[in-house]
Length: 308
Image 1 (tube, rainbow, N blue to C red):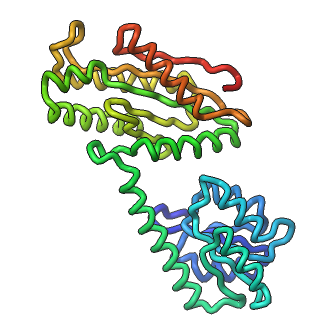
Image 2: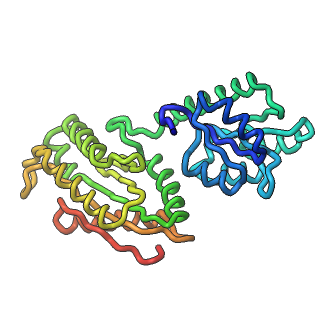
Image 3: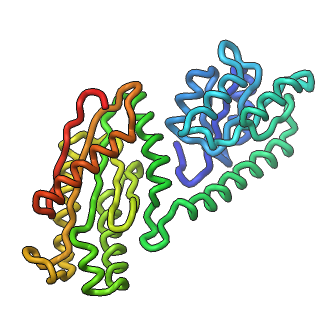
């Protein structure tokens, strides 16, 4: 049984004896995933996102160096630390190449158990600390949502993932209606409270671990919804629109609804090879612009051409 509270290690080795030895030694401390070939290793790494990979240099068919290069070339797996397992000091040239293309460390077989345990702990601790620092850089200071930088990085990741597994990907672009006049009438402190309240609504609705809610810029938010088709993305957008309207944040300086409302642009598609996720964003912004131009407080969607 996988324990989500424990760190995960992927062991990639085509030697059954070493696989058994690693599994027996570390299963009580970590959640262990195993692979005996490169193709499976790449798939397991992307789907399970281990905290560390132990990678045999002398794999058959696809070498450890080739596996490492592919892992580092994939934006989903590029930050996972890799410890190479070398057969002997004669593998020194391959070890150096491995470290040059992104490996973190190496150890010689037969491994010294205390040393291997110490190196595993060191690299996992370093990864966690690095993620904590990066997390601060990826957060909007006011709302604590992810910022535009994180949005752009994760959209590329999810775009490539959806392209590979041929699943729909949806994007919502949301803007607070008449926010400039709200700030002018009620003051910037009230504007900040409005932004933080809307951020909480978005997080309360987009609750899947795969969903990403970000503050795109100013009073504009962007939401990435993996594994979500157009119909379900529209349902999500309407739920967000109504929930924000139901907050009844007073805004009496605008004719019509005397409360804060939002306009939302929606786009959804299954990405194809050589398609551009930047144009995907542009389509969502186009839908948002149409929602704003045709009365606000509404959801507008676009159906992209087969290729964008």
